[in-house]
Length: 254
Image (cartoon, rainbow, N blue to C red; front, side, top):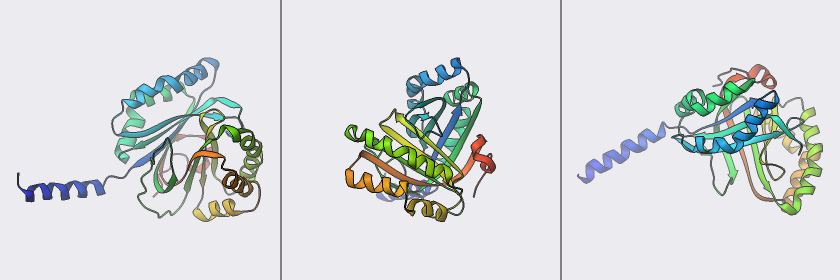
């Protein structure tokens, strides 16, 4: 095969890749009753093999939650989440709606919703990698914020002492449209996810003096985290129903 043919194939591959937009999903599930909650808890281990077999799924995390919208060390056995990074939007829609593992979660839960997103910024690492590919930095409309960290064992007490004041501050904020605290590993590997009406309202909260600002300063000066990541996303679509989403439920946002 000639060099020209190879070159043309390479150009075609690059051109096709430009149309491939990585899609990130967070699927939330609520379970009632002891048996369904036990099933959901068991799936934190059992679902791993199923997710590993899904094609075009590049990164995933099974997440539990805490009480009081997730911002406490006390587990909430009724709410779980799955975060996934897919090669394309088509893959995300296909697998979250039709794969056996996601259908099983839906059938066991009393409420569920999936948020489809594209990363607009990401810094830091998660499990020693950088899972989110930044496609565009432009956001017009609602923006989702994800922060996650692995807390150093020596800093666990400091971290959870600070958490209640931050939770109260977020809860009292009238701009935030949705917020939840999630975790990979109880107490130590924590994640917060929130949705804001626009970038300006999010920045306004982040830069205000108070518990949130103080916590950030303490984290930086005290080296609390072994690993951390901060990412922003443009929300493309929400499927399903989650009461706290309000007007965002079943919306396609362009």
